[in-house]
Image (cartoon, rainbow, N blue to C red; front, side, top):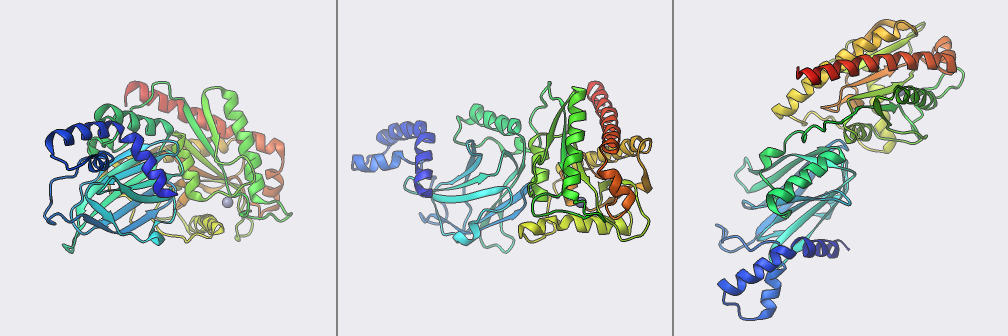
Length: 434
Ligand code: ZN
Protein backbone atom coordinates (compact mmCIF):
# COMPACT_ATOMS: atom_id res chain seq x y z
CA UNK A 1 0.00 0.00 0.00
CA UNK A 2 1.13 3.54 0.72
CA UNK A 3 4.42 2.67 2.28
CA UNK A 4 5.49 0.52 -0.58
CA UNK A 5 4.66 3.20 -3.09
CA UNK A 6 6.64 5.66 -1.05
CA UNK A 7 9.58 3.29 -0.82
CA UNK A 8 9.55 2.72 -4.60
CA UNK A 9 9.61 6.39 -5.23
CA UNK A 10 12.42 7.00 -2.85
CA UNK A 11 14.45 4.31 -4.57
CA UNK A 12 14.38 5.93 -7.98
CA UNK A 13 14.59 9.51 -6.76
CA UNK A 14 17.36 8.64 -4.36
CA UNK A 15 19.52 6.55 -6.68
CA UNK A 16 22.01 9.29 -7.31
CA UNK A 17 22.06 10.27 -3.66
CA UNK A 18 22.41 6.63 -2.77
CA UNK A 19 25.58 6.21 -4.82
CA UNK A 20 27.02 9.35 -3.35
CA UNK A 21 26.07 8.32 0.14
CA UNK A 22 27.68 4.89 -0.34
CA UNK A 23 30.95 6.46 -1.39
CA UNK A 24 30.94 9.00 1.40
CA UNK A 25 30.00 6.48 4.02
CA UNK A 26 32.64 4.01 2.94
CA UNK A 27 35.23 6.72 3.03
CA UNK A 28 34.39 8.75 6.08
CA UNK A 29 32.81 6.31 8.44
CA UNK A 30 34.22 3.07 9.68
CA UNK A 31 31.04 1.09 9.43
CA UNK A 32 30.93 -2.34 10.95
CA UNK A 33 29.23 -4.15 8.08
CA UNK A 34 27.79 -4.01 4.61
CA UNK A 35 24.23 -4.47 5.84
CA UNK A 36 24.35 -1.17 7.61
CA UNK A 37 25.96 0.49 4.61
CA UNK A 38 23.10 -0.64 2.39
CA UNK A 39 20.60 0.63 4.90
CA UNK A 40 22.34 4.00 5.02
CA UNK A 41 22.41 4.21 1.24
CA UNK A 42 18.66 3.99 1.02
CA UNK A 43 18.31 7.32 2.74
CA UNK A 44 17.17 10.37 0.89
CA UNK A 45 20.01 12.27 2.43
CA UNK A 46 22.60 11.73 5.14
CA UNK A 47 21.39 12.42 8.69
CA UNK A 48 21.74 16.00 9.80
CA UNK A 49 24.13 16.85 12.61
CA UNK A 50 22.67 16.10 16.01
CA UNK A 51 20.21 18.78 17.08
CA UNK A 52 19.44 20.05 20.51
CA UNK A 53 17.18 17.05 21.06
CA UNK A 54 20.35 15.10 21.91
CA UNK A 55 20.07 12.50 19.20
CA UNK A 56 16.30 12.12 19.46
CA UNK A 57 14.38 12.36 16.18
CA UNK A 58 12.08 15.33 15.65
CA UNK A 59 8.46 14.26 16.05
CA UNK A 60 5.62 15.34 13.79
CA UNK A 61 2.67 15.42 16.14
CA UNK A 62 -0.21 17.00 14.25
CA UNK A 63 -1.42 17.42 10.68
CA UNK A 64 -4.09 19.81 9.41
CA UNK A 65 -5.40 20.90 6.04
CA UNK A 66 -7.88 23.63 5.21
CA UNK A 67 -9.13 25.22 2.02
CA UNK A 68 -10.77 24.06 -1.16
CA UNK A 69 -10.02 22.85 -4.67
CA UNK A 70 -8.54 26.21 -5.63
CA UNK A 71 -6.34 26.84 -2.60
CA UNK A 72 -5.18 24.86 0.41
CA UNK A 73 -3.10 25.40 3.50
CA UNK A 74 -1.30 22.40 4.98
CA UNK A 75 0.17 22.57 8.48
CA UNK A 76 2.34 19.94 10.14
CA UNK A 77 3.27 20.46 13.80
CA UNK A 78 6.61 19.26 15.19
CA UNK A 79 7.91 19.06 18.73
CA UNK A 80 11.20 20.69 17.67
CA UNK A 81 12.53 22.54 14.64
CA UNK A 82 12.38 20.28 11.57
CA UNK A 83 14.72 20.56 8.61
CA UNK A 84 12.46 19.65 5.70
CA UNK A 85 13.22 19.53 1.97
CA UNK A 86 10.42 19.48 -0.55
CA UNK A 87 10.06 18.68 -4.20
CA UNK A 88 7.42 18.08 -6.85
CA UNK A 89 6.55 14.97 -8.81
CA UNK A 90 4.10 14.48 -11.65
CA UNK A 91 1.89 11.60 -12.76
CA UNK A 92 -0.09 12.30 -10.55
CA UNK A 93 0.90 15.76 -9.39
CA UNK A 94 2.48 15.48 -5.95
CA UNK A 95 4.22 17.50 -3.31
CA UNK A 96 6.79 15.50 -1.37
CA UNK A 97 8.17 16.73 1.94
CA UNK A 98 11.15 14.89 3.41
CA UNK A 99 12.22 15.53 6.97
CA UNK A 100 15.51 13.96 8.06
CA UNK A 101 15.85 12.50 11.55
CA UNK A 102 12.16 12.53 12.22
CA UNK A 103 9.27 10.33 13.13
CA UNK A 104 5.65 10.98 12.28
CA UNK A 105 3.03 10.28 14.89
CA UNK A 106 0.02 11.51 12.97
CA UNK A 107 -3.65 10.66 13.17
CA UNK A 108 -4.88 9.13 9.88
CA UNK A 109 -8.23 10.79 10.58
CA UNK A 110 -6.62 14.20 9.97
CA UNK A 111 -5.19 13.07 6.66
CA UNK A 112 -8.37 12.47 4.69
CA UNK A 113 -8.51 13.89 1.18
CA UNK A 114 -9.99 17.36 0.97
CA UNK A 115 -10.15 20.23 -1.53
CA UNK A 116 -7.20 20.31 -3.89
CA UNK A 117 -5.50 17.40 -2.09
CA UNK A 118 -6.78 13.99 -3.13
CA UNK A 119 -4.56 11.84 -0.92
CA UNK A 120 -2.03 12.13 1.88
CA UNK A 121 0.49 9.43 2.73
CA UNK A 122 3.53 9.23 4.88
CA UNK A 123 6.22 6.76 5.72
CA UNK A 124 9.86 6.20 6.49
CA UNK A 125 12.62 6.87 3.99
CA UNK A 126 15.77 5.04 4.94
CA UNK A 127 16.56 4.59 8.58
CA UNK A 128 15.61 7.93 10.02
CA UNK A 129 13.91 10.29 7.58
CA UNK A 130 10.17 10.66 7.13
CA UNK A 131 8.39 11.43 3.93
CA UNK A 132 5.00 13.04 3.47
CA UNK A 133 3.39 12.77 0.04
CA UNK A 134 0.39 14.90 -0.96
CA UNK A 135 -1.23 14.02 -4.28
CA UNK A 136 -3.45 16.69 -5.81
CA UNK A 137 -6.43 16.84 -8.16
CA UNK A 138 -4.38 18.62 -10.79
CA UNK A 139 -1.37 20.86 -11.33
CA UNK A 140 -0.64 23.24 -8.47
CA UNK A 141 1.90 25.78 -7.36
CA UNK A 142 3.61 26.35 -4.04
CA UNK A 143 2.69 29.85 -2.90
CA UNK A 144 4.52 29.58 0.39
CA UNK A 145 6.58 27.08 2.33
CA UNK A 146 7.42 28.25 5.84
CA UNK A 147 8.95 26.75 8.94
CA UNK A 148 7.55 28.71 11.85
CA UNK A 149 8.01 28.72 15.59
CA UNK A 150 4.74 28.20 17.41
CA UNK A 151 3.55 31.24 19.32
CA UNK A 152 3.12 29.33 22.55
CA UNK A 153 6.79 28.37 22.40
CA UNK A 154 5.99 24.68 22.14
CA UNK A 155 7.50 23.36 18.95
CA UNK A 156 7.49 24.37 15.30
CA UNK A 157 5.27 23.94 12.31
CA UNK A 158 5.64 23.60 8.57
CA UNK A 159 2.99 25.71 6.84
CA UNK A 160 2.53 25.23 3.12
CA UNK A 161 0.14 27.15 0.89
CA UNK A 162 -0.63 25.61 -2.47
CA UNK A 163 -3.03 26.72 -5.17
CA UNK A 164 -4.37 25.27 -8.39
CA UNK A 165 -2.21 26.17 -11.38
CA UNK A 166 -1.74 25.20 -15.02
CA UNK A 167 0.32 22.30 -16.36
CA UNK A 168 2.74 24.85 -17.75
CA UNK A 169 3.27 26.44 -14.35
CA UNK A 170 3.75 23.06 -12.73
CA UNK A 171 6.22 22.00 -15.43
CA UNK A 172 8.14 25.22 -15.05
CA UNK A 173 8.48 24.61 -11.28
CA UNK A 174 9.61 21.05 -12.05
CA UNK A 175 12.17 22.34 -14.52
CA UNK A 176 13.48 24.85 -11.95
CA UNK A 177 13.82 22.06 -9.51
CA UNK A 178 15.80 19.90 -11.93
CA UNK A 179 18.21 22.63 -13.00
CA UNK A 180 18.87 24.07 -9.59
CA UNK A 181 19.05 21.00 -7.44
CA UNK A 182 19.19 17.78 -9.41
CA UNK A 183 15.56 17.11 -8.57
CA UNK A 184 15.57 15.89 -5.00
CA UNK A 185 15.93 19.12 -3.08
CA UNK A 186 13.81 22.22 -3.40
CA UNK A 187 15.31 25.47 -4.60
CA UNK A 188 15.02 28.71 -2.69
CA UNK A 189 11.40 29.07 -1.74
CA UNK A 190 11.26 32.81 -2.21
CA UNK A 191 11.58 32.42 -5.97
CA UNK A 192 8.43 30.36 -6.16
CA UNK A 193 5.72 32.83 -5.42
CA UNK A 194 3.49 33.85 -8.27
CA UNK A 195 3.36 32.68 -11.84
CA UNK A 196 6.10 31.32 -14.00
CA UNK A 197 7.34 33.16 -17.06
CA UNK A 198 4.66 34.27 -19.48
CA UNK A 199 4.49 32.16 -22.62
CA UNK A 200 4.88 34.37 -25.67
CA UNK A 201 2.31 32.44 -27.73
CA UNK A 202 -0.34 32.31 -25.03
CA UNK A 203 -3.68 32.74 -26.72
CA UNK A 204 -6.37 34.71 -25.01
CA UNK A 205 -8.23 32.05 -23.05
CA UNK A 206 -11.87 32.09 -22.03
CA UNK A 207 -13.38 29.61 -19.59
CA UNK A 208 -17.17 29.44 -19.76
CA UNK A 209 -18.93 28.11 -16.69
CA UNK A 210 -22.48 26.83 -17.19
CA UNK A 211 -24.02 27.23 -13.72
CA UNK A 212 -25.31 24.27 -11.71
CA UNK A 213 -25.55 20.73 -13.14
CA UNK A 214 -26.19 17.16 -12.04
CA UNK A 215 -27.99 16.97 -8.69
CA UNK A 216 -27.94 20.76 -8.52
CA UNK A 217 -30.62 21.82 -10.99
CA UNK A 218 -30.54 25.49 -10.03
CA UNK A 219 -33.68 27.55 -10.42
CA UNK A 220 -36.90 26.35 -12.03
CA UNK A 221 -39.02 28.36 -14.43
CA UNK A 222 -42.76 28.97 -14.33
CA UNK A 223 -43.17 26.49 -17.15
CA UNK A 224 -40.71 23.94 -15.89
CA UNK A 225 -37.49 25.17 -17.52
CA UNK A 226 -34.53 24.06 -15.42
CA UNK A 227 -31.64 26.49 -14.97
CA UNK A 228 -28.85 23.90 -15.39
CA UNK A 229 -30.17 23.06 -18.89
CA UNK A 230 -30.51 26.68 -19.97
CA UNK A 231 -27.02 27.53 -18.77
CA UNK A 232 -25.47 24.56 -20.59
CA UNK A 233 -27.30 25.23 -23.85
CA UNK A 234 -26.34 28.89 -23.72
CA UNK A 235 -22.73 28.13 -22.81
CA UNK A 236 -22.39 25.83 -25.83
CA UNK A 237 -23.76 28.55 -28.09
CA UNK A 238 -21.30 31.04 -26.63
CA UNK A 239 -18.43 28.57 -26.92
CA UNK A 240 -19.13 27.99 -30.61
CA UNK A 241 -19.32 31.70 -31.31
CA UNK A 242 -16.04 32.38 -29.51
CA UNK A 243 -14.27 29.51 -31.26
CA UNK A 244 -15.55 30.81 -34.62
CA UNK A 245 -13.68 34.09 -34.02
CA UNK A 246 -10.50 32.02 -34.28
CA UNK A 247 -8.39 34.01 -31.82
CA UNK A 248 -9.16 32.33 -28.53
CA UNK A 249 -8.75 29.15 -26.61
CA UNK A 250 -12.15 28.32 -25.19
CA UNK A 251 -12.91 25.84 -22.42
CA UNK A 252 -16.01 24.92 -20.46
CA UNK A 253 -16.06 23.90 -16.81
CA UNK A 254 -18.64 21.29 -17.83
CA UNK A 255 -20.16 20.29 -21.14
CA UNK A 256 -22.46 17.62 -19.81
CA UNK A 257 -25.09 17.46 -17.09
CA UNK A 258 -22.68 16.93 -14.23
CA UNK A 259 -22.34 18.35 -10.76
CA UNK A 260 -19.28 20.50 -10.06
CA UNK A 261 -18.38 22.22 -6.84
CA UNK A 262 -17.82 25.97 -7.05
CA UNK A 263 -14.15 25.73 -6.09
CA UNK A 264 -13.63 23.09 -8.78
CA UNK A 265 -14.93 25.59 -11.32
CA UNK A 266 -12.36 28.10 -10.05
CA UNK A 267 -9.65 25.42 -10.18
CA UNK A 268 -10.47 24.67 -13.83
CA UNK A 269 -10.17 28.36 -14.71
CA UNK A 270 -6.73 28.53 -13.11
CA UNK A 271 -5.66 25.28 -14.69
CA UNK A 272 -6.27 26.76 -18.14
CA UNK A 273 -4.66 30.10 -17.19
CA UNK A 274 -7.89 31.77 -18.17
CA UNK A 275 -7.81 35.43 -19.14
CA UNK A 276 -11.51 35.58 -18.55
CA UNK A 277 -14.02 33.46 -16.65
CA UNK A 278 -17.71 33.79 -17.48
CA UNK A 279 -20.24 32.02 -15.28
CA UNK A 280 -23.68 31.69 -16.86
CA UNK A 281 -26.90 31.65 -14.81
CA UNK A 282 -30.64 32.22 -15.10
CA UNK A 283 -32.21 32.41 -11.67
CA UNK A 284 -35.52 33.32 -10.17
CA UNK A 285 -36.40 36.34 -8.08
CA UNK A 286 -39.27 36.84 -5.70
CA UNK A 287 -39.69 40.52 -6.57
CA UNK A 288 -42.59 40.68 -9.00
CA UNK A 289 -42.18 42.12 -12.47
CA UNK A 290 -38.39 42.08 -12.51
CA UNK A 291 -36.81 40.83 -15.70
CA UNK A 292 -33.72 41.27 -17.83
CA UNK A 293 -30.04 40.42 -17.69
CA UNK A 294 -27.55 41.38 -14.97
CA UNK A 295 -23.75 41.24 -14.87
CA UNK A 296 -22.19 40.51 -11.48
CA UNK A 297 -18.65 40.93 -10.21
CA UNK A 298 -17.33 39.82 -6.85
CA UNK A 299 -17.20 42.08 -3.83
CA UNK A 300 -17.08 41.65 -0.07
CA UNK A 301 -19.96 44.03 0.35
CA UNK A 302 -22.97 43.42 -1.87
CA UNK A 303 -24.20 46.27 -4.07
CA UNK A 304 -27.77 45.67 -2.92
CA UNK A 305 -30.00 43.25 -1.04
CA UNK A 306 -31.07 41.31 -4.15
CA UNK A 307 -27.47 40.78 -5.21
CA UNK A 308 -26.61 39.53 -1.75
CA UNK A 309 -29.56 37.14 -1.69
CA UNK A 310 -28.61 35.84 -5.12
CA UNK A 311 -24.95 35.25 -4.14
CA UNK A 312 -26.11 33.43 -1.01
CA UNK A 313 -28.33 31.19 -3.12
CA UNK A 314 -25.62 30.50 -5.69
CA UNK A 315 -23.10 29.74 -2.96
CA UNK A 316 -25.44 27.08 -1.61
CA UNK A 317 -24.57 24.97 -4.65
CA UNK A 318 -21.74 23.41 -2.66
CA UNK A 319 -24.25 21.90 -0.26
CA UNK A 320 -25.22 19.41 -2.92
CA UNK A 321 -21.84 17.80 -2.41
CA UNK A 322 -22.59 17.43 1.28
CA UNK A 323 -19.68 19.65 2.16
CA UNK A 324 -19.84 22.25 4.85
CA UNK A 325 -19.85 25.85 3.77
CA UNK A 326 -16.86 27.61 5.19
CA UNK A 327 -15.80 31.16 4.94
CA UNK A 328 -12.41 31.68 3.43
CA UNK A 329 -11.54 34.71 5.51
CA UNK A 330 -8.43 33.02 6.84
CA UNK A 331 -7.28 33.00 3.24
CA UNK A 332 -4.49 35.01 1.72
CA UNK A 333 -3.05 37.94 3.51
CA UNK A 334 0.00 37.72 1.34
CA UNK A 335 0.74 41.14 -0.15
CA UNK A 336 1.68 39.85 -3.58
CA UNK A 337 -1.54 37.88 -3.90
CA UNK A 338 -3.43 40.89 -2.65
CA UNK A 339 -1.93 43.04 -5.40
CA UNK A 340 -2.72 40.43 -8.04
CA UNK A 341 -6.26 40.26 -6.72
CA UNK A 342 -6.72 44.01 -6.92
CA UNK A 343 -5.50 44.09 -10.50
CA UNK A 344 -7.74 41.17 -11.38
CA UNK A 345 -10.68 42.95 -9.83
CA UNK A 346 -10.17 46.03 -11.94
CA UNK A 347 -10.09 43.83 -15.06
CA UNK A 348 -13.31 42.13 -13.95
CA UNK A 349 -14.93 45.55 -13.48
CA UNK A 350 -13.73 46.69 -16.86
CA UNK A 351 -15.07 43.59 -18.61
CA UNK A 352 -18.40 43.87 -16.77
CA UNK A 353 -18.68 47.47 -17.96
CA UNK A 354 -17.96 46.46 -21.57
CA UNK A 355 -20.36 43.54 -21.32
CA UNK A 356 -23.22 45.66 -20.03
CA UNK A 357 -22.63 48.03 -22.94
CA UNK A 358 -22.81 45.22 -25.50
CA UNK A 359 -25.79 43.43 -23.95
CA UNK A 360 -27.76 46.66 -23.73
CA UNK A 361 -27.88 46.83 -27.52
CA UNK A 362 -29.53 43.43 -27.95
CA UNK A 363 -31.22 42.18 -24.81
CA UNK A 364 -33.19 43.71 -21.97
CA UNK A 365 -31.28 44.59 -18.82
CA UNK A 366 -32.52 45.22 -15.31
CA UNK A 367 -32.01 48.59 -13.63
CA UNK A 368 -28.41 49.06 -12.51
CA UNK A 369 -27.34 46.04 -14.54
CA UNK A 370 -23.82 45.86 -13.10
CA UNK A 371 -24.04 44.58 -9.53
CA UNK A 372 -21.75 42.87 -7.08
CA UNK A 373 -21.77 40.42 -4.18
CA UNK A 374 -19.68 37.66 -2.62
CA UNK A 375 -19.99 34.93 -5.26
CA UNK A 376 -17.63 32.07 -4.42
CA UNK A 377 -17.31 31.05 -8.05
CA UNK A 378 -15.80 34.45 -8.92
CA UNK A 379 -12.97 34.24 -6.40
CA UNK A 380 -9.95 33.17 -8.46
CA UNK A 381 -7.33 35.74 -7.39
CA UNK A 382 -5.77 35.98 -10.84
CA UNK A 383 -8.62 35.38 -13.30
CA UNK A 384 -10.93 38.28 -14.23
CA UNK A 385 -14.38 36.82 -13.59
CA UNK A 386 -18.00 37.77 -14.10
CA UNK A 387 -21.31 36.05 -13.53
CA UNK A 388 -24.05 36.73 -16.06
CA UNK A 389 -27.66 36.29 -15.08
CA UNK A 390 -29.22 36.01 -18.51
CA UNK A 391 -32.68 36.67 -17.19
CA UNK A 392 -35.17 35.44 -14.62
CA UNK A 393 -36.88 32.09 -14.95
CA UNK A 394 -39.49 33.51 -12.57
CA UNK A 395 -40.60 35.83 -15.36
CA UNK A 396 -42.68 34.29 -18.15
CA UNK A 397 -41.23 36.66 -20.76
CA UNK A 398 -37.66 35.93 -19.75
CA UNK A 399 -38.30 32.20 -19.57
CA UNK A 400 -39.64 32.18 -23.12
CA UNK A 401 -36.57 34.08 -24.35
CA UNK A 402 -34.12 31.84 -22.56
CA UNK A 403 -35.37 28.80 -24.44
CA UNK A 404 -35.58 30.63 -27.76
CA UNK A 405 -32.55 29.80 -29.98
CA UNK A 406 -32.73 33.17 -31.76
CA UNK A 407 -32.63 35.12 -28.54
CA UNK A 408 -29.78 32.95 -27.27
CA UNK A 409 -27.78 33.51 -30.46
CA UNK A 410 -28.26 37.27 -30.13
CA UNK A 411 -27.22 37.36 -26.47
CA UNK A 412 -24.22 35.07 -27.10
CA UNK A 413 -23.13 37.37 -29.93
CA UNK A 414 -23.19 40.36 -27.58
CA UNK A 415 -20.99 38.53 -25.09
CA UNK A 416 -18.64 37.51 -27.90
CA UNK A 417 -18.37 41.15 -28.97
CA UNK A 418 -17.58 42.18 -25.40
CA UNK A 419 -14.89 39.48 -25.17
CA UNK A 420 -13.33 40.79 -28.40
CA UNK A 421 -13.17 44.34 -27.04
CA UNK A 422 -11.71 43.18 -23.75
CA UNK A 423 -9.18 40.86 -25.40
CA UNK A 424 -7.92 43.51 -27.80
CA UNK A 425 -7.55 46.01 -24.96
CA UNK A 426 -5.57 43.43 -23.04
CA UNK A 427 -3.33 42.66 -26.02
CA UNK A 428 -2.68 46.39 -26.43
CA UNK A 429 -1.71 46.62 -22.75
CA UNK A 430 0.66 43.67 -23.11
CA UNK A 431 2.31 45.07 -26.23
CA UNK A 432 2.88 48.50 -24.75
CA UNK A 433 3.87 47.01 -21.45
CA UNK A 434 1.28 49.21 -19.73
ZN1 ZN B 1 -27.78 30.03 -10.80
